[in-house]
Image (cartoon, rainbow, N blue to C red; front, top):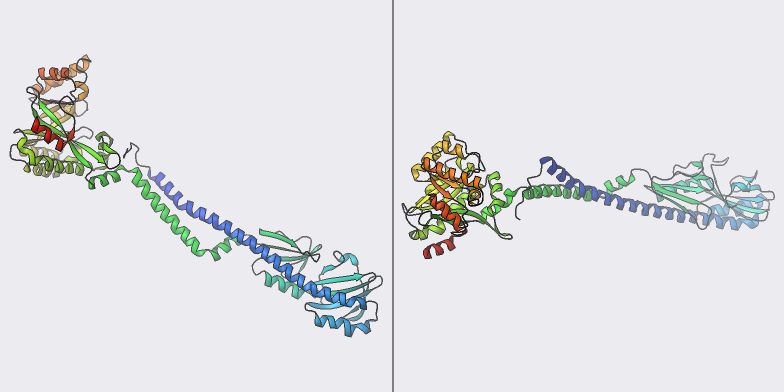
Length: 513
């Protein structure tokens, strides 16, 4: 159905859903960007480690060439080979800082820097007998050195890479990541210091990669918080877009909630489209059964749902305050449909229209009635306003002035569904009423419920004592018709005489009646 009985959501609930609509796209987008940034840093960490391996392998290739070239010189006198062989390799090979020769009993006896300078060599310092990451030597005691050793039998040749080249490579290769060089139990950090043990594991994208050619490895990764830093530096436009989408989603969610929670939106749309149309039901005289008038009923011609019953939308219209413009539109459509055919009516033809307390808050109803009656020849129709009891009409000075002016205009007042509301007797006291309309629930009990029949008889008796006209609704059987006619009821209304119908159908039926 176009409307439901579910009331509007609480403001706190709407706020919660609105905030959720804002946070959800921003949060989901942030999670996606976070995952993307993390994958990017993992890839960057791998590329950094691979580049470091390539650079360090290149450095060690030069030491390997130098050491292999010098190996045949091991055992010769230091003075013979120092000037020619040792220093020649230092000069010709990039990254090689110094070269040394080792002879029997691991005696490091000749250096390109110091000449003949016997120093015992401990093979256990070298990983796989080839690499030693040391913290310095007597010449440069606080500078890291990477020593490469190549041996055959009792002969060995050493080629050393200065820590400057190592730390410079660590800096250049990894501008943002943390990168360390590890050889055995020692590792070199980017500040040029040698540390013992395993390097610390990076908080983000940790990676450990070993060289396939030399006995060393590198560790790469990023410090904690670098994912968010990367996102801030690389995705500022996307963050702005996420915030915009979140705010837009929140606005949309709030609008949808109000639109779906409040029936007034759909009612306003239907009112502008003139989907609320008049249906009329005949009212006949109790004595002659001649058509004496009609009651105008509101129906909703919904474009998707078809014809909608009034009980499904009238309460919402009254609650939202739209019942007044809806009734005004109904009166306008009724006079447009019936006024051209007024000659077919008997004089004093009754046209009943329902009103509520909302109609009695100003004098606009008086102008609507005046405009309605002006569309018909004088004396041709009598407008009857039927007071419904879903809302109480307070007897204020304004309402007294309104009803007095309506009576002066010739408009009659009827109390609809008399006997079912708590305010009916109060209305008789406070307002100058012309008719009582007996609710169909009492009529339906004729011949079935003695108590309801007594109430019905009491209402008829009361109207007679108060000199009020009386209309009985919901007559569906001849038995009900005959009983009410016998009781002197003035007007009868119900399916027995005619169902609610469009105005055009009523006019056609009236002419042939």
